[in-house]
Image 1 (tube, rainbow, N blue to C red):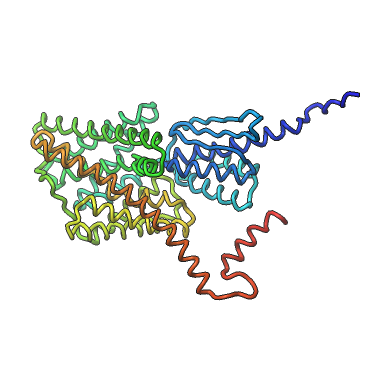
Image 2: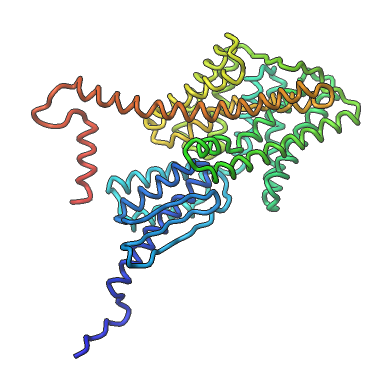
Amino acid sequence: MSPAPDPVGVPAPGDRDIREITATMSLALRIGELLLSSGAGASDVSAAMRNVAWACGLRGFTADVMFTQLTMSQQSSPEEPALVQFRQVRYREVDYGDLTDVDHLIRDLLAGRVDRVGATHLLNRISSTGHARPRWSVTVALGVMGGGVGMVLGGNWLVVAVAAAAAMLVDGLQRQMGRRRLPTFYQQVAGGLLATMIAVGVAATPADVSPSLVVSTSIVMLLAGVNFLGAVQDALTGFPVTAGARILEAFLATAGIAAGVSGGLKAAELLGVDLGPLHPGAYSTAHLPVMLLGGAVAAAAYSFSAYAPTRCLVPIAAVAAVAVAVYVAALERNFGIAWSSALAALLLGLVSYPVAARWRIPTLVVVAAGITPFLPGLSIYRGLSLLATDASAALLAMVTAAAIAIALSSGAILGEYVAQPIRREARRLESKIAGPRLVGPHTVRGVRGLRRRRAPKR
């Protein structure tokens, strides 16, 4: 006698398993997409996807990251065919608020405070909700960032004001071009050209404003969106394909800035406007309190423009101020600008790890904002300005700019490598110093962790 057929609408057990597997893989891929589009390194994205899949009960899977494509596969046994899912990573504006929410989502999923269905609902809410701040506030924040960079470079109050206005105008232009879906390269060209033409207009007036500082601050604003950090991290952690793609993307964005500034300098030459003398190899610093304030303002303003949570603005400003102090101290002791930048980034990576844990944000938010005051805008402008008169000095300035970018990224990543074992050993030392406990855990954190683990069983 043949078995009775399954009721209509009730899937077979195998179909249920396949649906569970595909739902878990889809959740992991969507989380990886948001992380990758927000500037996270390929190693971090791959680890997050694996953690999500493992927490949801998936076994026998693989996860791969290829810059614009994420792949997950699962094979229960060698006799069964593998299930494979792909997800294309579309470009989206960086939102550190969403990045923070997804980071918390992953932690809750690993701790068992939320299951796969609940995590999917939370991710739907995160991805469908708009930005936490209006777009005009982002433009104002970028203007404040430009003013802070002007303070770091030693500009007077008039330079700071003009730099802030130029940054807001450049952001407005790029936003209009972005709405028309023009590639990033052309947006960078237009931004560099507009910044230089603003400096040309200021130089044509009797105002006491350094045109080179105006252009340099605008270049820093344009460089802040270039993902040098992720490119170097991928190269150091064994993802050469993704690293190569990101390096090429950063190179094209920087080349667009150079093309725009070069066009503006040529226009100034045709108009007979002198942008002032520029001495090769000269790096001036402002008074230390002014630089500390400028670095703190620039870092906090950039994090605000990237929709970072408001609670972390003050810690990010403090970390950036400390990094600027280290940078100035090293520069005054003739370490050179590249090594000074590397030391500042190293300290930034060391400090950002415990700061991020304390304020419940991803470490990437602190590091990406903290290196903003050190981006090599002045070196790029110096190299372009000297290209027609002193080719060797121009080449040296451009090489210096590349060295600064590599030093900032590699120094910050090295700080992260050093900070994690230090924190782990500090916890072990705390546990040993606390002494034996005949009843109860060593710390309050242990009690809280126990309650969190038991919560889903109630």
